[in-house]
Amino acid sequence: MRLRARIATLLGTSILVMTAGAVPAAAHPDPPVDGATGGGDAYFPAAGNGGYDVAHYDLDLGYTPQTRALTAHADVTATATADLRSFSLDLRDLDVTSVTVDGTPTSYTHEGGELVVTPAEPLSEGTEFVVGVDYGGTTGQPEDATGALYGWISFADGAFVANEPEGASTWFPVNDTPADKATYSFEIDVPEGTVAIANGVPGEPRTADGRTTYAWEADDPQASYLATASTGNYVVTDDTGPGGLPIINAVDADLDQAAAGAVLATQPAMIEYFETVFGPYPFGSFGAIVDDDEEAGYALETQTRPIYSGVPDESTVAHELAHQWFGNKITPALWKDIWLNEGFATYAEWLWEESTGGRTPQQQFDEAFAAPAGDPFWTVPPGDPGAPALFDAAVYSRGAMALQALRVTIGDDAFTQVLRQWADRDEFVPVGTDDLRTLAEEVSDQDLAAFFQAWLYTPAKPAAPTPA
Ligand SMILES: [Zn+2]
View 1 (cartoon, rainbow, N blue to C red):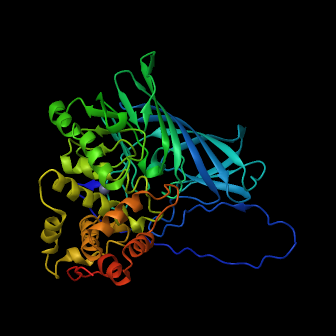
View 2 (view 1 turned 30 degrees about the vertical axis):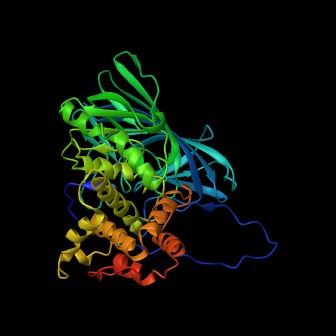
View 3 (view 1 turned 90 degrees about the vertical axis):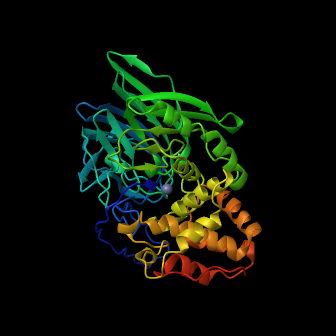
């Protein structure tokens, strides 16, 4: 994400209590359990669920911008990771009219954003099942814990859909945690003349009786906060990246098409450059959704197709592109580690600027490091900023500074290897900051515990880095 303005408010915290019980040997098998209604993230305790792993979301969305009416059906394919008597999906602000499991109508409750489903028969661990949900309602303009618009944000000509951190539940039933990636299929039915853009690659639109259905397939597994199905008055153009990579851009017709086109035309060269630094572009397509919704006020790295609330500048495009490696492919399990997304994406902006003849990363570091020790900037530790400061400037800027400081400490060669090996990790294994420290220590053969403590977890200005 890249912000224009954010207002911090307070979010409650919760404590996850786990108990270990004695297991009687050779007794009756354990009875089936009720899957947890939270995913275990201290910042957002209600987001995500337990007891299953989603493989695929098949979303059928009928939307009319003029009335903000959403009529939808979701088929969620998942595998039970425990013997389940019931399980939960996150779904807020919309009404559920029926739920099936493997096609059989089943009982459910829907309160406080939790859709709790109780199949007629318990689901055994390892069983794949499909839960079908009919739902809908009148959409609005949801706000996150900091007061920023997010999720399915309704505007006059369509919806700007950007979910970070846990706004996916404002438009589909979901295991809303970045630790559960899945593939997505979208069918988005809108009034003829409105265009729908989602992640991945499009099918052929079908028009009948004054409505058009757009199909999109996202075959690269993605976290729920990176799903989008945005609608509007878009002009769609195609471009091609390295190796024939399909690039699909959508720009709101009310915007300056030449200005938007000029900045989006840099995308193929940016991909080519970042491939030389980070390794191969991780997904099967790319592009941009450029909307005229300044009220939203930010950009988000929605997978394969970042969304912008206005015509972006070049460094913002570089930032959202870099997230395709850092955040989208390599994904933190917990929101406290968001600097692993934003610090890397900001550092990538610095690299892009240098590659185009601008300031070096060290010059960018020096400018930011000039903030005096008494500046409030230094009071937010980017490695655990707290939910109200999830998008604080320190997460971005001090995060990027931490990477430049690491580069100075371990040297250019080791740092280059760290970037490449970090980007080369398994996309299905969520990461934490300790994983980065372990990698940097292995590559550099240095003990970096004090370095990480100073740069990421201490609410004070760190000492200037020195080569080891
Ligand atoms: Zn970002």
